[in-house]
Image (cartoon, rainbow, N blue to C red; front, side):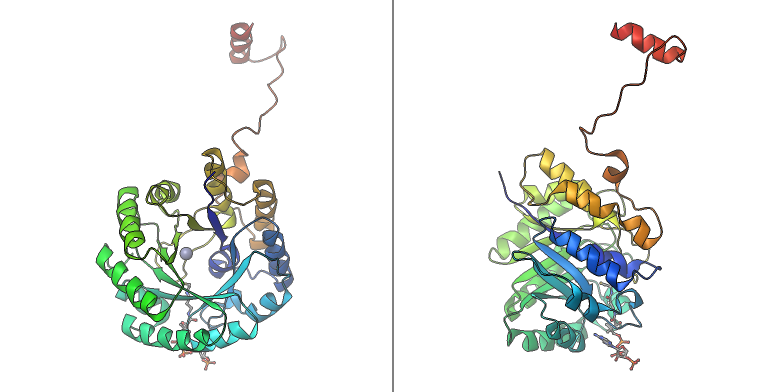
Length: 320
Ligand code: COA
Ligand code: ZN
């Protein structure tokens, strides 16, 4: 059975985009529940400016409050040296640095040019490399930019190479606004996998146009084994027009299990955790599996009696 690595991002990519502030204690309880689900990695929070991302202004309290479980990597998004110092003070296992492959989205999200971002992230890497903490770089808008359109695969390779050269152990290719499509994904994943065989490569899909699961299958066929996903399918970048939720964790795990992959994730535990989300964020979540149940969650047959509707009588006769 092929082993895959599922990385849960709901408490970062999910909550960053929510209007309703989720209480610190509730965030801690959710991360603790996620720790028991079997995820390879949990992106707990982000150490960003509280003005830019007020929903995650309690990053220190959350990182300090959670109960760590062996075998789970606890990561956090970090935009600059200040964020890295905050993250390191909380003992994260990994920092997840971020910049965009598209110039326009980088300026919208991080308020600087890509070259300025790169210079700043070089500095961050310098600080973190002096510690045992791992370094991942998330490349936003790798499959398309909502303001510029197509993003060339060469650009994705170029930025991946620059960060691999600095010693990042992992790179995440992010489809920030769900612009990826399967044949594009297969080709891009093959090229990056071939060029950087030693890199821990993660694919980060959003379901903005309903293609996240299809893109996952395309990435799998190109040898990718590591995927970000968000419980309930919540999430999205507040600085990307039209952004919506990540690929939904329980939909992803449900599909991969049916196809015979070992995801490491206990689907029942993940569904129980997902069921908490509407209460925490104050609205329904996109998850289909939470609504419909698993494929073989069977339903009682409707009662068949003299008083039943004509369609049911026909069904009863046929079945007799
Ligand atoms: N942690 C806490 N505060 C921070 C910070 C950090 N990592 N980085 C900057 N700040 C504070 C500064 O101290 C300053 O505060 P002040 O106004 O009280 O003096 C304020 O934020 C602005 O700082 P500045 O250096 O001018 O940065 P900026 O306004 O250009 O913001 C970012 C740059 C990247 C730090 C900010 O836009 C950010 O955090 N963005 C979040 C991006 C994100 O997470 N997007 C979604 C995920 S992809
Ligand atoms: Zn995302």
